[in-house]
Image 1 (cartoon, rainbow, N blue to C red):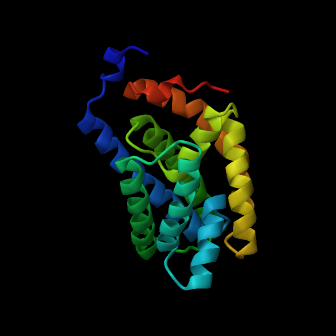
Image 2: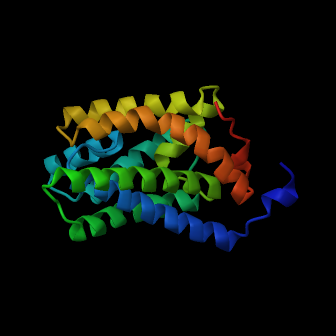
Length: 210
């Protein structure tokens, strides 16, 4: 991609998009936790860890992000300022949204919450990666594995499997949504990140749709 194309979206636009991405991820996580039908593998671990340590889910997310960032650095995908801002912001957003979201008993409402959560999270992750300002630690690990020849879809599955195993050991919120998330996330992100990056005009657009 040419340098002129890469500069198509300005820095202010991309930072605004990153803030929206961080907020969206926090909202999506909180919706899944409140629906009580299972969460994403990383959040199976954070919900379990939060219960064990008697801390907020978002606060546990900060600890998880710190550990994941170490692995990203080892894969030569060091965090940018946006990564740090995002990790802190997501944790805070989760804590905020969990304070205001209801925990309905009606299954229909809970399913709607989950569908909305998945749509919001996948959109937010794609936007966050595409800003090229520093995506989330888990996505950095995913991209680091991709740099080493593993397709994006397979990279995400490997990460989800590791996080899920840890979450189950911690008795986190595992459920049908967890399985759906594991099966969908790799294929969805491998298709949504490249076009979103092309829209942003960033180097992330070079990621192949594998």
